[in-house]
Amino acid sequence: MTALPRPVRNPIADLDTAIALRRRRDIRQLLQVARADVVSAYERYEDMLRDIANFDSVAANQTELTQALLGNVPLMDSKRPLGSLRAAVLDAAEHGQFRCPLCERAQVCALDHFLPKEQYPEFSIFVDNLIPVCERCNRLKGAECDRQNGLLLFHAYFDDLPSEQVLVATVRTDNVVTITFELQRPSDFSEAAFAKIEKHFTVLQLLEFYRKEAIAEVADSTDSYIQAAQRSGVAGIQQMIGDQLAGTAWRGTNHWKNVLYRGLLDSANFCEGGYLSLLPPSLRNRTAEITTGRQTAYSGCS
Ligand SMILES: [Zn+2]
Image 1 (cartoon, rainbow, N blue to C red):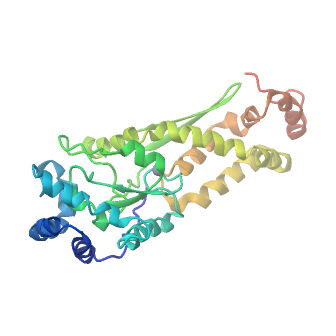
Image 2 (image 1 turned 90 degrees about the vertical axis):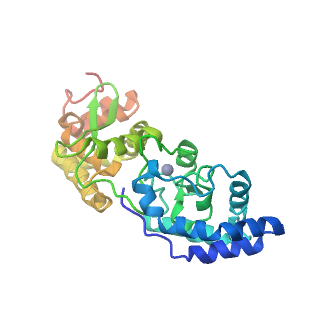
Image 3 (image 1 turned 120 degrees about the horizontal axis):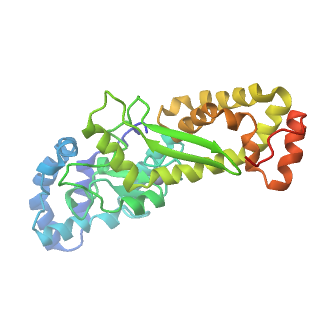
């Protein structure tokens, strides 16, 4: 995961727009009184991300203020006065080709409040707290905010996954191709830093998500593997996967596709014909004969 560029936006202007547009005079006054506190909360937002256990909301135990701040959220709906704020956040996803920055796979379609708006309503329309995400991640993350342990997920604008490899894929080929993803802590990695990664992957159920995505990805490439094998045998397949790896290297060491391609290259069985298990059984034997010229080639049975 590499950090998304933050949307260019004036958050204080957005706040003032929201306050001015609230219809009820008592709500406007309540928000006007709280404005200075909200602005100073904006200024310490990054400090809060680093030490969430020690920061209360400026609206803690104030039900009316909480409701007033939450009432600003609908102003971001399309065609409402802060619709341009929503659009600016969704446009930030363009830098990830509109892939969700949390799972790096699905399409962006929603705004997530990184610090949940119910717990920190002062950030309900704060641009740095609004993350473009997919429907699945939005649902799984929900109001996740582990204040007790100070463990937050990765923040799309402020956090990068490490450059060391922590995500590993293992590929096995028996009657079927199985791909498993797991997290491994590098020896020079602190337990606290690794716990944050584990939290991110657990809450978003990413190991299982990547397992399914990886199988689909590899199955879609079966024809290409067969053609590469027909041209240049095992070396052709290794070359093809190596090219795929080079093509996605820019996404970072721990991007699931890079991890998958390294796992495939590490699996001699896969490159030597195990990929044929991706085909329906009726096609396996015939294809194996064509690609290897041998009757004894991989038959789909171990
Ligand atoms: Zn996602």
